[in-house]
Image (tube, rainbow over all chains, first blue to last red; front, side, top):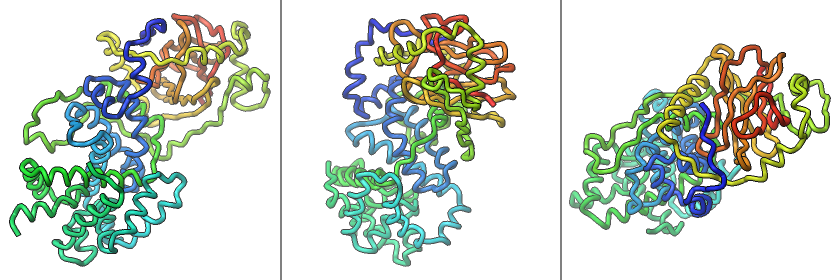
Length: 201
Length: 288
């Protein structure tokens, strides 16, 4: 039950790197080796963003916490599969969070039906209303500006897909446009956002 | 349009998770052979992440993290290496599932004990004051008024600490214990500030007769000092375990059972802990 008391006079050798330049990528490498302390730090760094995103899609707080727990367990279990060559740690983590939230939405068909009835009206305005929330991220301003450069159809399609968790066929049904058009608008909309925000590898 | 062109059109929908499983698999195959598509997908995924970061952040409760840290301590990790195709999309299943606290588990925080109030001899008729009265029944605790708070700041260093084989077993047992506690139907919680910085949340269950203390940014202690927890009842303080601050585990199960204790306190004690508190409590929370 008692914890071992660390010897204060002999700080561990990685003390300096520990306190200073712990990038999320290096934390993930340490997590892959079973370092719980690194996991705790990574959690502190990203948890509000992860839960914020999931909550945005699922709305329901309890469900959002369940999915966030799944995501963090997956990070713990699969950290060794993180490949820096394929993108940064934030991308890996938030992509996983988005995917798990979408999985949850698609798994619960009943709430899906309800959402589909509610339709687009509840999603498009919600995006604008985010600016009224207590805490607004820097990224929010960038995204808002970039979104304003999209055509109406591009913006609706991207918003429904990303924040609504709708598949492209559902987006097509909601917007009453052919599915081929939706695929194209999702791609050129995202390319436009990429260029507007200067996201390039 | 060729099949490759068709697939290439899906990069946007892929980055937005808007494809069905069949299309998703087809696109992922295509990505292995087209560098151009790989680059585009990488950039669009980064763009999607910007959309994600534009959502208002939501900070999870301290229990959420405590549960999670307990879970990972008991969850084996997957090795690296090539992933079999069949395993690629398998959902990762945790060994133990800990239900998150119900959304209505609001902190009662009617007990806000701080060393300032204690030092100032605050005599408010609050639960805090009643807990203090009990605390002061022990003459030992009259010593060294603010020394504990000073000691807290003197050693604000982080010391790396890995689990050894032996204390790994302890960690597993503690993790299971905390999971059981936070899932108890009669679980209650109360929050208080820690004199010296940070906050402490006491979580307890009458039916299980167990308690755990969770911390947010508890400082490391100077020298060989340890934190010691106490169950406080009519008979005074009963030792409930010592520990050191650690960012890898920011919660601690109390040893022993609640019994008739009506409050939990925490002091800074010399290495090994003390039989009775030798300093004033830096946290005092009533279990009621």
